[in-house]
Image (cartoon, rainbow, N blue to C red; front, side, top):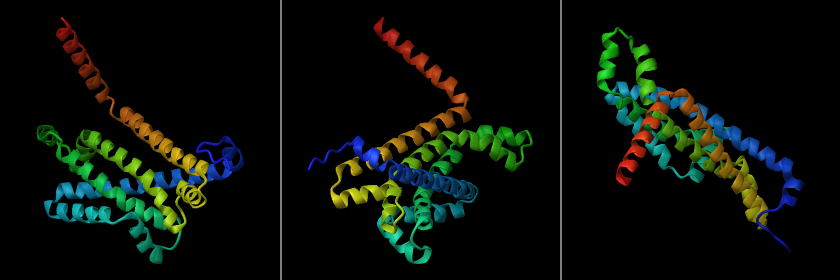
Length: 232
């Protein structure tokens, strides 16, 4: 029998099912990232303020990241059940290490002179954090967010272990029946979803950090000038 990797007939027949699993995959990714960011930011700030807590925080998130995904979901299932909750806990646990580390690196990389100047102007610790430290740490935070989001899109598929893997359900079914169109369609949709979310983060970061546009333009001008000088 003909068994192509790409099939419009498969999409016509199973379009609703594919869409439903794509929605589940997307919602799981977005929800996991929102929860992970809400946990990672306070943890990174705490690690920034207290060197005593920095080691344990990074150590715990590092240990969680090293646990194999299949094993983690299987270990959680007896306590949190089969389904969405178990997958969300696992996804959040894996995203924490990247987000906490990048946020901490960004906060530690803020120019001490800028911080001292803000303190000299009478900034409170909260205002200093929100208006000086976090904005300057945004490039590092955004880099971590991009890595964690793309990784989460891939990890959602492992949720098939507990019966809630989004597009992973279609992949697993396709591999069981050797249905190539089902495998290829779900795989390509995962790639497309990761790309769309990554581009969305980049666009949001460009909007949130307008000052980076000018620096990029200056770097491009300097680059063109060096090329012209070399050509001359």
